[in-house]
Length: 331
Image (cartoon, rainbow, N blue to C red; front, side, top):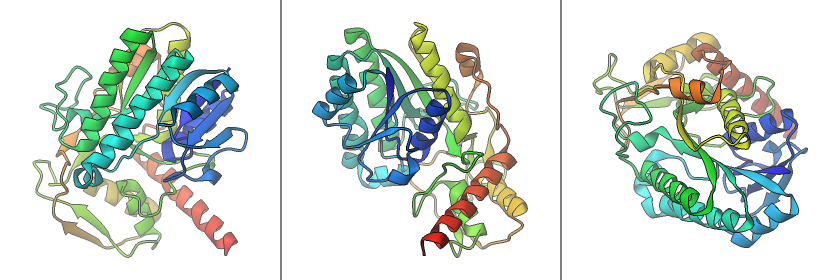
């Protein structure tokens, strides 16, 4: 039996592949490499280059590799881009997920772990926000993921597909052993951008809005280490294999940091000062969103190991040095 990881050549997906392999699983990756990297996929996994919406490829992989579970990461994820290109996001995140679900239900897969997002909450009425809070996304990205959650719920009723939906808060950091990390050129993740600026890979960085109703005027987010997030997926898979019930769970630590707090921490850990400019707010950004994170611990027994902003940033900085070494060697 094997696990199919869609989008396994991407940032979070590549960490999931490592976690599965470390746990002794057989892993098949399906990725079109539109944003992911072939080099990011551990060679012990089987990489198939293709689109998750290609139902014939998916059905073939399920049969050929005896897939018993799917972990679905493949998606477009940049909130401002979704505002500019909503139809592209509904295609990539909703329509293609529908095709994936159609293929795996026909092929007989009964376990599914879905990569969702805290963006389904929109601007929460209170923080920390729990899983039962009102769902009111304010971006096409959040709406595209919520629509996929609904499809998954309904497919479960109709086809007996057991699932765990994980709503990510802000994912950051890198594999502590430097085997994987965020490699996307022009990435928009705050910690990635700040680390690149600290290492002079960017001339300066922008803060999008300093007039939010927060203590320092900048947005507050709950940052979760990517390795802890991967371990949550492993726990979700174990839960489903044990016959556990369908679950929808937040993935965060339950505490928030402002944009300026993150930047100051990057400056402190890197020992580098760098220019920061204040720009206008970006569309689709809530002022603050922090996870109520007790349910995932209770339901899955999840025990994060890297619940520390300084550690997250240290691992992200170490990965940037690794990328620089790889780039230098290639030249």
